[in-house]
Length: 396
Image (cartoon, rainbow, N blue to C red):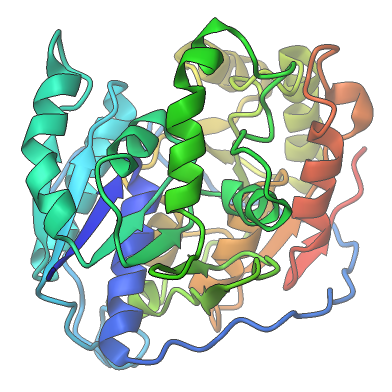
């Protein structure tokens, strides 16, 4: 078997595949060792100017800058593996599709082969996708997975037995994946409520069970996790550092504004946080720290964002690329304030050496919905508490 095949369903997954390819081309990515949490400081965040109410107008994809030149920070830029094919299992929402198309062009610019698969469009899309991908799956020596919790990816994993599996970050879900793999548990997203044993889950249980075995190390399979997050390596796996060297070598350094920017989260949309409590928190943070821009998560609803813009006065920016690239390209505030999410781990790495401070505001227990998953508070507290290189903000 030859070749490497990556499955991605979000812009961030594709970004992390690019980071993995960059690290693989540099050879021997460093092993991730346990890093003790660093002390956090409590500081206010200053204000910053805004930019267009709905983000920058569509334009050409920003090209990668030459290593050591205006487009990078001087880090070497090894060529990406030429035998890597990225399969985009396109979602249906327009924001994700738009960002994915722009990320796909960046991947092509890096020399990767990108196959766009409308896996959810119309009747027969699933059968058509399975038929088209069965051959490449069986031929692949390595499969790179962006979301091990994806039912679509799990179904694809039942078709083959790869010798090498790599899991790249899909946000903070990587932390839960590593923990569940280590404990031998079935794969369930942390924000799922209830027992997870409804009719749909029961039907898909055999697929999920088999996929979990395909994602676990074994006699004929090696498994690595490529991550920027603090995870304990499950037995038999290798954890590799994602330090965003590709991003830093291709973009920036950014121009800094004098103030702060807020980063949105989809915790309301996933049913974890009450929308009124979230709006109140955003209002207080904006007023207390003088922020004027709100970078929306791609999954935030238009109704919620409209309410934020009207009731807080914040200028809502819908990024056309993952926030790590937007921030690195600039302009970006000297302080970036976020709720517990992946960016409190990734932005300090992507913006290393720029002088930008990343601050995290924890989710208060009273913000959670009554029917939120019992694991939600502890998981979110862990995301914030393990975020090194950040400052802790007091709410209120």
